[in-house]
Length: 534
Image 1 (spheres, rainbow, N blue to C red):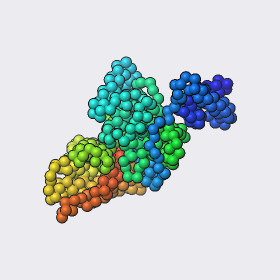
Image 2 (image 1 turned 90 degrees about the vertical axis):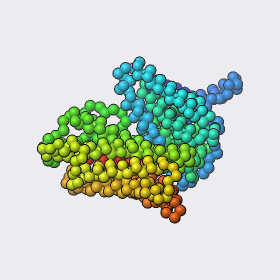
Image 3 (image 1 turned 45 degrees about the vertical axis):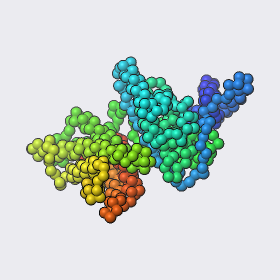
Image 4 (image 1 turned 180 degrees about the vertical axis):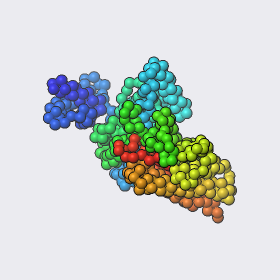
């Protein structure tokens, strides 16, 4: 007990000195160590006393040495404004984005860790080279210093926040992408902690979002840092204090928004599937589970086939994740204004290609699962089975993605007439949206039949994914209607509603694709389909 008290007191003093607040150090140690009961009273008082003494020592050293006091509090902070309904609404979005970024970082690091362990020296050297090349590419493209990507962000954070107005949206997006990639690679092979890089990414995310309608720069920075820290640390109280105390006096004004972002990020990161590798004997991911046999097949898939199917379904999910992310990015108005209409259209086109690849793989799964009936129908691409709801939904979805390919490709052509725009851009986009709606309806019909037959219970992942995808299809349909080209003027009927529908639909498909990676709840029967669309 004495060793525990002394170690905790020393940790209190060190962390509170580094972070500039005795209260923050206390919260961090209490949450990280899980201290409670009598231990809390025994450790908290000596720890707080040690933190206060440490702060006084630093004040005294300032007068003796002239070196100044040390604190991570940001020296230059933009003025904060009172919270509004708009900023509280954006706080929910920031929490979701922060949780997804944190999950992707942990996923990348934990996926690479087994590779690192197989050949530590070689793989670590290769990862170090890739990290250096990423930092160099950032400097060459953006003209900013490579240290923002290469190091933890502790020293670069004040400069980023102090000169937030000098950063354009493309540079901030590039910084977030490069820092996220380097962060995930570093966690897999190099020593380091989760605090400062997550704070830096969160601050960059908040600055990038500050141009949104109703968003405040100080609130965006606080929400971004809080959400990213909550996603990486999984300590909501510490994350809230980190974000608010580092903003100094303005941190009090943005506390409500930070609390909302942290709470949302904490809930989302705990709902998302564990990014770590599965242990032997644990349930497989959703895509790997198959029923013993499809009715009429007369045989059950072997273990090697199940293993191949696991990889297959993961590939489908990741293709949908990338495609949905690109569609969501292209639908954000500040992104379109920053990169121009051509690059925004190219973003949609590339996203549609990922959708088509994923839809084709799902269609192949549906074809391979058809009853063979003594023929080679399961191996034929052109197999027709309109009475099979899984095949029907997959085939209609694939047709919809092909229409999206045609629509987004034609949108890249400059100087199209109004008639050609309606014929080559809007019409295939509308047909693709209708196909997605029909595919979602067929998937829900199959889910209802399975539930009635006792093969599927409501509130399982498959049922939830089908509902989310149906909502995304409705949003895409609204977007298509709003994007109608008025013949008399050649203008889009409602461009804002069209972008909003695309953004909401892409977020729905992104959520459904992420849930495809999650394990099915224990004890819930798993149907033959694997979530008909993203």
